Length: 221
Image 1 (tube, one colour):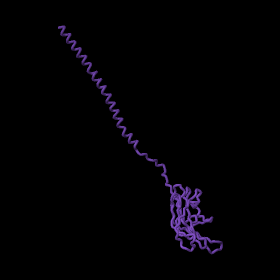
Image 2: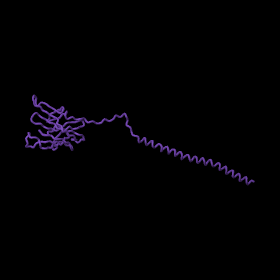
Image 3: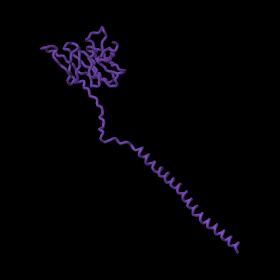
Image 4: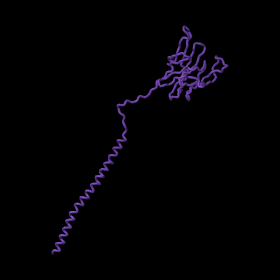
């Protein structure tokens, strides 16, 4: 009888120990399972925020409305018909393409200067800006009609005209062309033994340049 009681007591003790161990195991598992869930939640939050940051970084920068827009640079227009030129040291002011003045005080003969045209555009001063070349005629009141070329230099302060360069007397101007920082003047002239009364028919070419000082002169000078 005592032997049965001892065995029963031992079984009850083992059962009690087993019952006491189960809650502890459950608590440990529950505690250990909380760590991955928290880490997963933190990881998910991190990945969820990244697209927002990327979107903010990729958003275009909008300029402030208080900054005034930049005004485009507009070059001053040049009108050769209303420009001042120098011919043989004499200042001539064209108005609507024409200048007239008495050849001498009280003289009926008039000095007449006209804008002829045949304009050419191009860079003659090697500064990247287009200059302008054109023909003018100058009649001093005698028998001759002289043809000149003038260049309007496009400078930082506006256009400035060069001296008028004489091409010839009673010639027939053909064209002007600016290339490689030089001015090519083509015209019909005469041979040296031909009289001035003869009609110009000899093709001729004159090459001009603009010096650093703004003077128009022959290229070979």
